[in-house]
Length: 127
Image (spheres, rainbow, N blue to C red):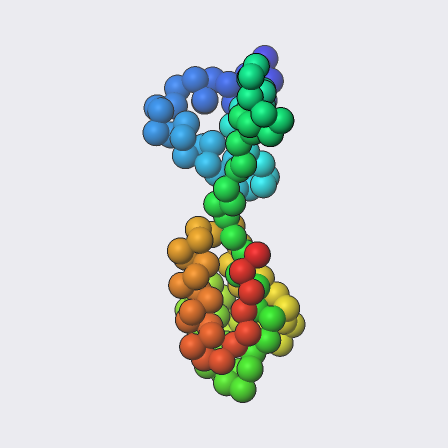
């Protein structure tokens, strides 16, 4: 009798490298974690105090609608376009501002989303 863990390990053992990469990405997205090994920066002899310490650049951004502005209906339309939400859900998101419209997106996508919303008069922050 095999356990659930054995079954999972058998499935993982039969995956291709591409499937494993996709599994890792989905795992990270679902649980909000990273499967990367932690990197510890060790100061080297002869270097100054903070030398050798790497600063990690932020790669994921959240786009937060802080206000709808004067063109609420147009903002709702853009929110629907960007998120795929239904009319009621998009309206509730806009009415409930501040609310996150998109989360964990690239810097470029966050800027594009912000521009589309601001074009309709919405107030938007990228965090």
